[in-house]
Image 1 (cartoon, rainbow, N blue to C red):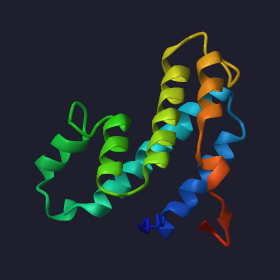
Image 2 (cartoon, helix red, strand yellow):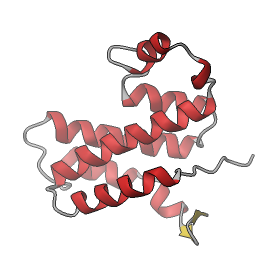
Image 3 (cartoon, rainbow, N blue to C red):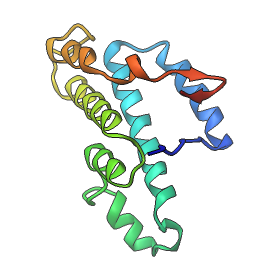
Length: 140
């Protein structure tokens, strides 16, 4: 099976540059929370690109993606993304780990850096860094 390529529109370029700049000045906690928010945004965009979202009534859109809608959580989007075939199971698992880490930083006061027990354990479980690379701006 071939997996779809995720391409960000050129409108994302300034946003990505701003986020990269901001991440360089953040604590571990700030990095995890900001990166998690950006990941949530990208998942939303990817899902919208795969469904007839543009033909959906405005109220239905709000009911799906706004809190407390069924797609308001990152976890729901991560699970729907794998069901839609946006990524393979290994990436799904990595996204779940990343979201769990973001939640640890956001909700556990004692979680201050990436050496926190559950966070460092999740870092060790990541599949992508060992199997995915970028060459000429394309994932390989």
